[in-house]
Length: 241
Image (tube, rainbow, N blue to C red; front, side, top):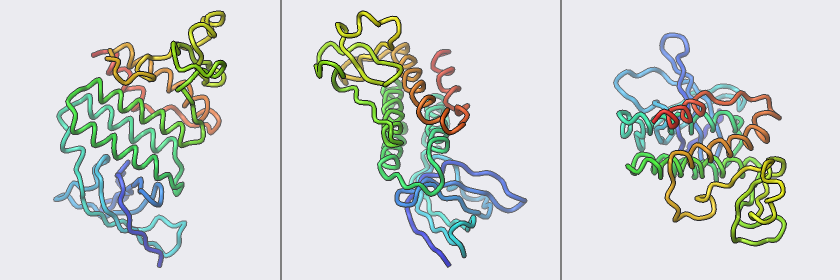
């Protein structure tokens, strides 16, 4: 009998037959783990977004196994009446499911995800919540092996007047370096290099489209992964706000 005890974040729960759920849990030390749970209508610990302690047991490592969980923090119940925060939560969980494979351990991404969930429920500054989500996506891209260095110009090493990003390489350049090619380059959102800059709705949308372009190019397209609907819905909700 194989047994795992870990802390995790519920990322999905789907009905299986009449009395069970198939629950996916993104764990700190064991990656994404799937297991069967008996439905308990009196408890809500298996709601996606919740942070839990869990025990997973199986005869063989490749089998589905059984999950028992203990609720640590019900993120969903904290934000259930705030549609914007729910959109961020749903997009976060969908990106984890899309970008990571079952069993692949990624402790850094787990910590980043956990920190983001705490930011979402504790902060009422919606733009800051969106900013935290965008930073999460950038780090998810980095943790997947596609680090984008936007701290200095790729040509001059200057840290001043950074303005453009190459869609081919993801490298950043200054306004002077990129001036000749500006029609073929992305414009860098200012808050990427200056945390003190106040952001607006258009900054958020531009940043999500920018990060989404590189996630699509480096992660989704090579692995034939469909862009998560929850992420598209997040962008649409921001545009309509």
